[in-house]
Length: 438
Image (cartoon, rainbow, N blue to C red; front, side):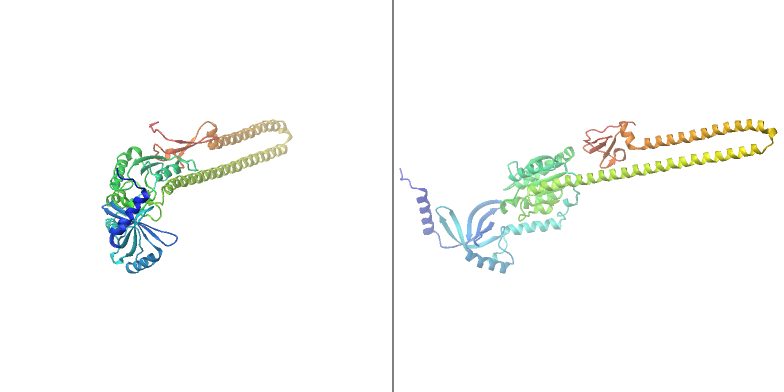
């Protein structure tokens, strides 16, 4: 049996062998998958080689601070762009192997004439093609629902971004309830775009049954090359032509994909997507509260106006009654004076006539007064009957949908209805609508 050696010894053998067998430098064509800057000024890269969207080779690389200043400055001066992920570069590199950190490339120079990488070029071609076809604004033409209550979510159940999205919806501080359904999809790697398109097809097939208000595609950041599936042309067309507004929360601010560009609305993160959905609820609630306050204010003003009219009418009726009594009294005085002026021979007759007349006048006056009082009572009852509070006390209610009486509009199943009683305000959801009274 061959004598065993330690892992460190094996790595030292690998290091020595590489140093002895490899040339000092190699010109290497590769795509920058990631580029990160350290605080000290060093650049750390991940170089990849891809076939389509499939990564076939990958290696870590670095450019030390002193070299990076010269390389990056010359590259930007020549190309007008900074080094960034997605560019295909031609780099002069030394192969290094460290016993602890493994294989990496130390980049000594980059040929700026190699320009942009193939990946960035293809992406720009897709954007120009979509723009020429008018796809960039199609999905944006849809109006967002006032309250997005039913959400179709395209994500992976195991994705951290999906968990953040659901938690934000379910634990929102407003207590809103949002119905959501997950449509599983692969969010990176070869074939991921097809799974997202398939999820969109599933949503469209059952959209009439479930009545989805929005589609949300969420992932949650990641390496730039992990987002390649969201730059797929077919996926972009599917999003643009989808008959429901689509919201994307695919990555962070620095990761803008073609899917973001063609979607109705792009937000930074899955959490921000949940906040965007909840903002629709909050706006609607604020409008509803404002409408209720406005109705209460108008109702109060109407009642006050009717009260004033009633007081004025009552005062007018009292004045008319007093004037009638005064006129009747004046007529009585005139009659008495006429009787006194007649001869003594007719005194008894006139006295009899006067008594008879007095009785008639009194009867007439009482009849007029009673009639006027009855009119006042009838008018008061009519006004009270017109008061909404009277109907509420009798057990009647008033129902409204979207701030308007239900008989003045077309209502639908799922609408929220507010019912006002004498002392309560009841919110309910319409589950069934049937014909009645026709």
